[in-house]
Image 1 (cartoon, helix red, strand yellow):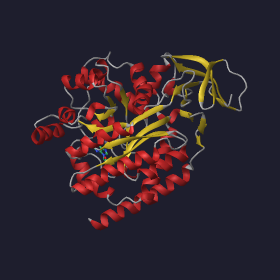
Image 2 (cartoon, helix red, strand yellow):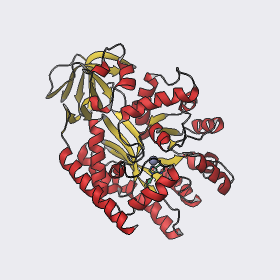
Image 3 (cartoon, helix red, strand yellow):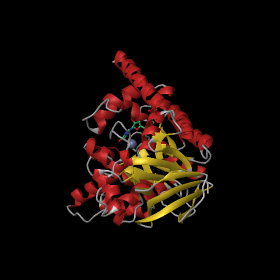
Image 4 (cartoon, protein in one colour):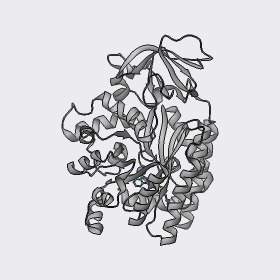
Length: 428
Ligand SMILES: N[C@@H](CCSC[C@H]1O[C@@H](n2cnc3c(=O)[nH]cnc32)[C@H](O)[C@@H]1O)C(=O)O
Ligand SMILES: [Zn+2]
């Protein structure tokens, strides 16, 4: 074996069992009693989980963390985020993605889906960090003329062609028209067609706020899902972020069309967008993953917090403590997200990619050990992760990130964020 994760409580097949995990050629070769390996990670007293999959984020927005808070989505975007984003330089996007990568590795996230601009910088950061990712250029055409709109779509398609399969196959790509309210009709239709032609996933923000739904009815005489359906948007491999304001018929339509959803409970609560009907989505058979959304609207990339919120928000919304039990929330955070990203990871089983997060259980808040699945969802946090493995490569051992210089990245991020805010304020 190349790697042995020794002596842990391994979450496999819905329960934690005492076992070793053996890794060969980047894949899980054995779950059981494993001997002899080139490298050994000690997992005694630890919970060995499939790595968390962050199904929706904007990683480079880590540089904007804490820049504007306590605002609704429209004002947050229009008055604060878009003005500062206009001053982002490629190296800012690069450092923001590196900062996010360090945070994700440290909190047990092994794969993420990202929609932003300057995506070649993000792809390079992913490549170096060792993480797995599905990446797409965020296409926005609002306020642009026809030629500029075509340019946006071309940028998205160009990124797909250049980067699909990069990073030794750890990078896949998507086409990402940002939202039905930031792209024109033709671009939405063509982006969907291009995704089918290129054989990649289509991903967008959908029905995030009540205002978005009302504006759609005003402009298109249809709610966002029906509007997109009329543009053949759901004909390929599609998943949406949020889906906060979906009614029962819309959930059924999306489920029938095989559309998945990245549920982002923290961002929805923080921007007061509402709470998504995630229990109904799961009941309808939609593939549900969990996303943090960008680190400027969350404000962390800790998927453990997000998984806990997924279970709690559903119970609170439905007035029923039995909906979205711990195992279902953990499943969404791992297997569900992996399915949305089109990777085989998200499950600890022979033959699957070795994408693993090891949680140290030796902590007061993880004592006693009645149920480790319960602890993973309700009690643990990303800071409890000690080892992170992707594709059989050790990205972190004993809290030390091996692929990226965490100290250099945080210092550079601090410096670049300060200069970015100064540039933005100088113009205002
Ligand atoms: N091509 C576009 C960039 C689109 S990237 C994705 C965009 O999503 C924005 N964003 C971040 N969080 C959210 C959210 O929760 N809802 C909608 N948009 C968001 C983010 O600020 C970024 O501008 C351009 O050149 O401006
Ligand atoms: Zn988003």
